[in-house]
Image (cartoon, rainbow, N blue to C red; front, side, top):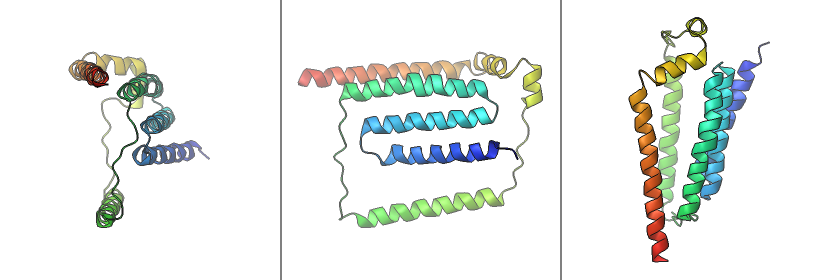
Length: 176
């Protein structure tokens, strides 16, 4: 018996559970920790699928560096628990939102079950990846040739977010 599907479902369940925790927790640091656990669950899924480089990058870049940045920004902005409370007066909104989510979920499940899964093999089949030097070489060649502009734009976006967070925090500290 192949144990990979069992691990896939375990990691998928962990990812879904911690994703719900990200949404439902009120403490921003708890949300960030749950997001780290989601990143680890996805790294496990990538490892099962044989994309070991992507799994390692998921842990190093997202669970490590990006989450340290998020925690830094949360602590810098001194984000407390949100004061938004719908209370009992908005029970209709809660019921409507829950019903809409249930309908969308059922629609997605139905669409997935009814659609034929005919995913065409791309130009990078497992055999082609092994022939070209492995997963790392293929990813690096694509990232620094075909996808260099999105890669650089992402780094500029992250830099702008850091500068914005520091500016907001500095302005906030100046008022206190």
